[in-house]
Image 1 (cartoon, rainbow, N blue to C red):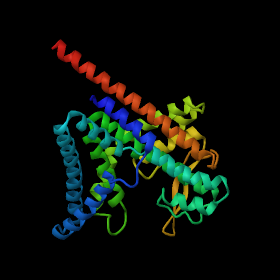
Image 2: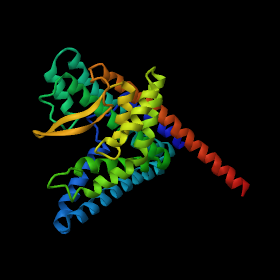
Image 3: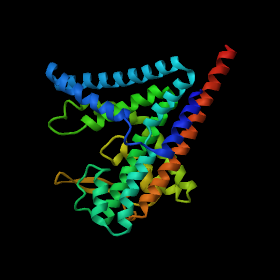
Image 4: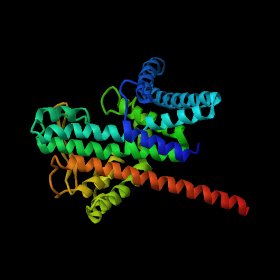
Length: 324
């Protein structure tokens, strides 16, 4: 089966059923492996940064090797079994439906006035303290999470899949999982997690910058201001403390016409984040489903453009080979 069809099937599977919680998931297995490797490398390598580098390389290598082995072994049983394994592996790297589900779990209690339940649901999406957030703060947390995870959970794995197939997508998810596990600026992981954080920054460099204009295009197709989306994206993308997260967030802020960023609290410590979309309206509960809609349409557009680029590149390669 052609890779393009495998990716389309995986995308459809994620949109239809999301992540079945009762089944083993590669991301959870990768996280488990990373923690086991951390325990070993910290014991045998005194240099914390070096131990983190070895852990990151071994984790990504093991994830890719395991994926290759599964595809190879099932393919030996029957070509269709190998194709099915590839589709399932690709499917596990996507998280559009789960992302929307988490966001709507915040939205539902918000609209019925249950701020406590909304705060609890938001705590599953973000790392900031949520117990004292007001309605707008909870909605902002959900919208910011949808924007950031549009890259991590949707467009970046799609791009890696289009370029390098299931193994590329699995490699990306391993990198992203390493950052989620070790990429903290605290005493335990500041040095050990350095490699995981830097590799994740590098892996998201292109996907984040490609996602922003796609979100702006999606805004135009949804009847929102495409000009404002592009203006805020170009103006505010680099204000974010992360080298990549600001691109999707700024595009989303402009598309929705809302202000993101501002004061957050982490473990009781206030942290002032740069304003993205400064001067626009505060986030309201209605912006949460709107952000989910933008995420879904952006995913479809991104996938279509990426597949078109892949097919175009293949045609150019064949034409060049024929001419030579």
